[in-house]
Length: 280
Image (cartoon, rainbow, N blue to C red):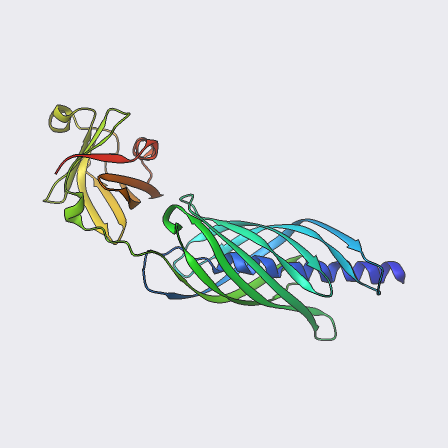
């Protein structure tokens, strides 16, 4: 019986730990400036757990854990996440997580919470709070906080969490007229020409932009999302559409952060370094 009780305690701890991941899902990819309300769900499993029995009272454990899972968001995006935390089966749990999106942008948060049994101990319920502490890529300077609730699946090694909260990103103001002109990657032989009529060309020299462009077509700008729409005659990206989040990192410099683009040559070139303005 003692072995069975201990096993049940450890299973309860696993379920309780699941709460930590809820925080991860709270983070949502956005470009809006105003505060937004988010509602998301995450599903995860424990990849590592090291409980230690305290011994002061029956069933008191403390320990550390790691978690991996997936979060799904209202805009259709799916992100991977990792969690690291500590728990006390009496006091609750706390930790940190990182949520990583397809374009490499990340969101970091800390969290804390508690758990309690329900349905005569057959289910564990979780609740707590989270707060953003860092963002990279399109989530730089993200701020947000909120709460979460959840419970364990059967078997209890898999947990789902629903959360709510609000988040904001710093004001971003990029207009098409801010982009018109000639740009160059200073350390690479690559020029980008953006024209007032909504067309673009990419080449290794200024002369090559007109005679032998690597890529050409039309572009669109929605908020900070810049989209290349290449012609079928494009040498490197024929008929392909690619999107990037733009960031003006300082006066006269423009950074392209990958969102999605099937063209390998364009992805590689955009990732090398920011573009500097050559002429209006």
